[in-house]
Image 1 (cartoon, rainbow, N blue to C red):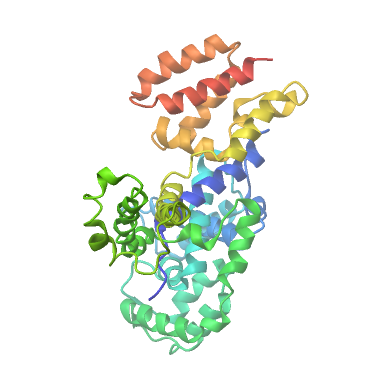
Image 2: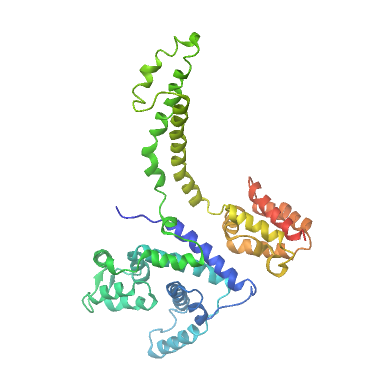
Length: 398
């Protein structure tokens, strides 16, 4: 069965990593901008940078299309030449601020992960467009934005009849066969994911669909069998004659369930209870993984301790951790964005930046409990609000 990867998890990781990288680049210079060469160097993963530029091309083409009008002849040779020159000049004047760049970066990261796990998705999204038929020459236009597994796509296009139009569905089905045949030549998934892991922890398991609960379901019959050992506890009562009539049915009930168990001594009963704990632990693993995947924002113990150590040493490192922006871990940030700011990344950054400008803890906490709580309608968000208030206390405690 083909491995299933989660689209939502790719998108989530893309947003997290984009936020982290933008914090590193724009943190000290929030009004800075990026030009084309800077975009190409922004991450150490070239495919991510190329996909950002490809998105820019799409937006750039859409903007140029707005210039067309029924009042003018846009097919005239002079007009076409002038427009081409204008587009070339504009392409050398890229200027991206964080609010417009970060969403492009997040999408490029998710698209790169998609191409790593399933190259056919890259073929569909990056080479095929909205048209119904294509020639190999038209498809080659998208090759300049591919770096990951590029030989795979080049070999496929080389095998197509030159100048001949092919149906979209036919091309996609044929590419999937080509991908399967060339699987051994693909760049290993682990190798690509390691490049991301260096920037922000990531493994292939983190991107899998949540099938773990379904797989763990057959283990469900085990727990009902485990409670039977307490029934076997009846033989430990023979020293009490008064209860002798009651244990008589016990051998009938327990004989089929524990044929291989030792004589029910206290030591044996202690061992009999052990499988129950092991079964409970085994069944808890899928649930933990499920919760971990669904609630990635929950801070780990190491992150919590790191925040506390940051607060304890704030006096020694005032320039680095005296702001809330730097004190909040990436997982905590994602939690705040989702739970308190309706998933709006820029609103979160605006609020945190404003809190950092307030003069004292009481003013900042009043702004949270009065202004923000009313503005965002926070209901049953006490856990996240309290975490934010504690961070405020740490910021102003020195």
